Image 1 (cartoon, rainbow, N blue to C red):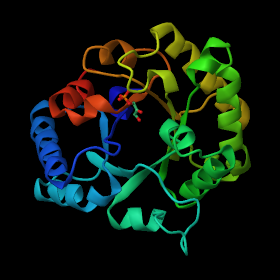
Image 2: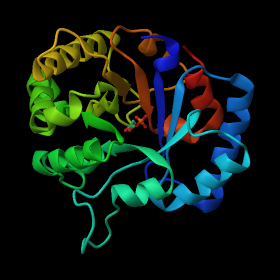
Image 3: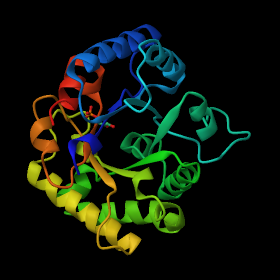
Image 4: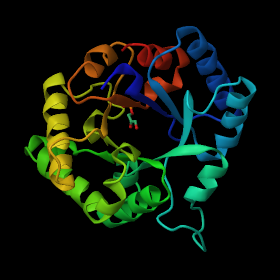
Length: 260
Ligand code: 13P
């Protein structure tokens, strides 16, 4: 995969307010214009600020192909009486072309199970959204050598029954490997572990799809910063990164985008 096909995604999570979100996107755009990174760039702001962030991108004349927008989570239902939830169509109104699904904070803090994540993944793929499915093991599972078992279960439960949606267009599916213990800890997984797990994800996807090879992007996430990004992004089967903390700093984020 060449550099142009790498994806660097900023997951702002539940951080900041309207004023700081506008300031952050303005600064990201300013640095983006200077650095001209070759990678695809994706911003996942808190949903309530999607409109404000979109307005700034329009104001700065940044096409959605250069800096895309995505939603951090979606409802497992297309519409109806589901208080507090947001649908794919609502995200589309704000020009979102990506949906993040099954993030570890959704799985572990909000207790989303494999069934819910399957429904969300299916709905997102059906709606032709670029769908980022997050997988990853807890520290307990890592210590017990269960990483591959957990990842296999998470991939199969989310994808097996949606093969008819994935097969015609692989590029709409993206996998993000985020070891739960590496998220926000300041300590990313070792390069060896990242290579090992990404290879395993690639092979498992081939098995699920019944293919010899596939071009599904596999992102790494978990304490990626401007210092470790160059070595992580140069690993085989690493096609981009999902950034939390460091994406709240415009300089660090654009440095990461420019590091390959
Ligand atoms: P950190 O980069 O803060 O570790 O967060 C990673 C993450 O969860 C991105 O989705």
